[in-house]
Amino acid sequence: MGDREAVDAAVRHEDSPIEELRGLVRFDWDAMDEWLEEDEPVYVHVRSPYTRVDILASSRHVRVEVDGVTVAESTHPHVLFETGLPPRYYLPMTDVRLDLLQPSATESHCPYKGKATYWSVRSGDSVRDDVVWTYRTPLPESQKISGLLSFWTGKPGVTVYVDGEPVD
Image 1 (cartoon, rainbow, N blue to C red):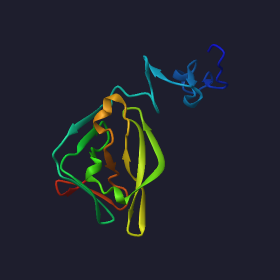
Image 2: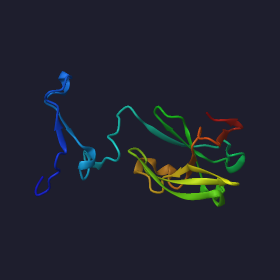
Image 3: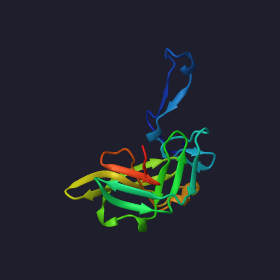
C-alpha cells in the first residue's frame, strides 16, 4: 500500500480440501499496522456481533479472600456481564487492600474493554500471580470500569463472595 509492503502477510488456500476456502485470502493479523472496522480501530480480534458487554452499578456486598485473607470488600461494585462469560465484579480501589498488591508486567487486551494491567497478591509468605486486573483507560463503551479492580474467580487461593455466597 503506497510505499509500504507486508511481505508474506497474505495466504491463499487454492488447494484447500475445504472447497469454501479455495480462492479466499487470509491476512496475518500481526503483519498489519492496524485493523479497522469502519473507521474504528480493532484490538486483538474482530468483535462478534453476537457478543455484548453490559456494566451495571450495584449495591451487592462483594468480599474477596486470597488464601483466607480479606483483600477487598465493597458494597458498591460494578458488575460486568459479557456474553458467554461469568459476571465479573469490579471494585473501587478504596475498597481494596492495596498494600497486599504487587504490580505485574502482565498485560492482556480485549476488543470490548481495551488493555488490562495486572497485580499479584502477597498474602503471608505466598504470592498469587496475576489475580487482579484493571482497565486504566478502557475503550469508550467500557468507561464505567475505568480504574476499578477485578479478581479472578476460580484461580487457586482466590474466593469471591457475593452477598455471602462464594462465586464459582
